[in-house]
Length: 474
Ligand code: SAH
Ligand code: SF4
Ligand code: F3S
Image (cartoon, rainbow, N blue to C red):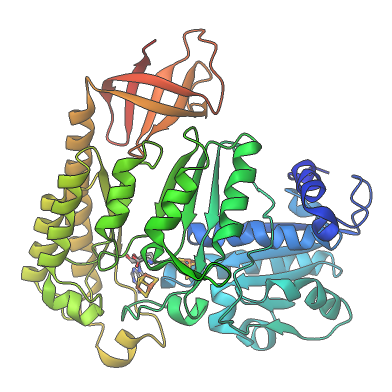
């Protein structure tokens, strides 16, 4: 049986005392094995690592082999209809496995569990366990309930839970980059978005536990951490003992100071909340990567208002200009939704021109998918026909293609400090890594003595639309 990261978990528990020592952890003693798949955003992926840690601590070992699993979990996403459809298809496949082996238990975790509550469990009888994102500590108890044939559901949302004390088991890790969750939930009410309903109120994690986790990762050889939250710029934690508040800019500085060799990234920034203080910390510390993910959603003020994004086109573009002024080397990426309720051709043109002004290196682009229960679903008609949504999306994708190519061509001739991540996908004779700006670079090894996790200076010679191609400069 192939076990995931058990060794590192034992290592963790040795550092942290008995709290997370897997019961009977000496490689032979797991009582059962679980298989887990993650869908959706980085936060969900990070949650999966927390779930793995809770399960390990309770005597369950992780396996990559589905056939050998006693427990199958899917950490799910509800952000668009398509995301839910993908998970449903997967659950149907798992049900077939269950028919072959009645002992296997299937559990739905995360945002879809929250949204569909008992529907999956009782009406469709697709799964045995349903557990929302704030209830993972109760998973071992729910497994026992399901084993004894009871309904196992916990979808309570919390105002406090941050899993601050849990040291995540790093799953599928390259040993170089890791996610560190700094907050949960979201207090914004973007009218299209299901997240405030599936993840609950925003709450920030204790600063000390974040610093401790990041320091621990660095001591284990990790070289890059990404601070995660739906809206990192509204991070706010009050230190009662010292009676002072920690803002996101303060936190970023504290993490940057752990070690200059540790690269820091963060995601996601809301254009209304990212402050000059954050930009100035980015400028001050070389190890805070010069890349900002700044979702636009729409370039039309009228549509932004309907989306309840609380900024205008002009505010957004001024933010981009400020970033360019303070951080000339910084790349900006975005999320864009096309075909939101009432969107006209003129609004669509506004989105294209905002993209051009902002010069995104990359974007995640979607057409609007109505989500039940959201403000938009209640208030507005989803009135842009699908073929129009698809055509506009294609125009947005084409615009992004043009911008990405331009961005990459601009890099030719420049030299970047690249964090080496491993062999390139296409050839074992090439390395792959990323620049501070979050761009992938592929370059020949040429028998140089480098290894994964090293920083290497690379001069860019050529590019494709998605990748820079370079050579090591010594
Ligand atoms: N917290 C982040 C985004 C989280 S969701 C932010 O504020 O930007 C990731 C992206 O999914 C969003 O930025 C948005 O572009 C997209 N998205 C969210 N709801 C959607 C919907 N109903 N239809 C299409 N795309 C959606
Ligand atoms: Fe959703 Fe808006 Fe919150 Fe992002 S900021 S998670 S888009 S509600
Ligand atoms: Fe999806 Fe939930 Fe993340 S809806 S995008 S998994 S917060």
